[in-house]
Image (cartoon, rainbow, N blue to C red; front, side, top):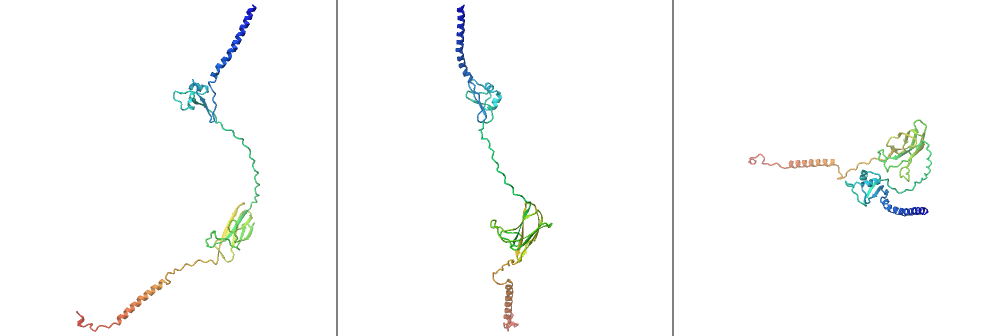
Length: 283
């Protein structure tokens, strides 16, 4: 009985050893089957690619990636009617978002403090020019500069503001333009501008002007005057022969009259023939 128990225990231990030796071989044999399917991963362009292995067909590939055969055909438009695939062929089995390179986090740029605005006093500026209107066309040309000695006044129509300045012929060296007489810090409103030209000039346009200015505006008004000594250029007399055509005609008539008188005198002094009226003249 004791030997029987020993035999059973030995058989049990032998069986355990045999089973233990068999399990590693089973695991080694199962490894190739597990490596037959490789999980597809998205590429940089977002396409999920699968490489066909031996024994694959459209149904097994679609099943491996949880899609339908129709979806597989939509991803791979070059498949034929029989959905023929060969080992090594790459198939698109899905689409994912394209892989983008990581970007550096945006850093906050400190905003420079805004410059304090210039206080606005709510006034305006009116500048006036009296220019030498050389050609008298009431339009200022680039070569028509300012006139000294004119008097310009700016008066509000309600009488709340009135100032007077003198015009000048100075030139701004930076702008190369005539210097204007400017009234600064003028309150908004409606104003009359009056100009008095200096002696020796005649105005070429109206010497009064009315304008309305608003806060912040800068108005500019021009007046023209022409020197009294400026005269229109006399038309040049054509000097071809130095003689008047009327005198030539009169001389021609006198010449013809003289010739006629000479011819008449010549005929009067000729002797008459004594044979006139005789029978010899009648033939």
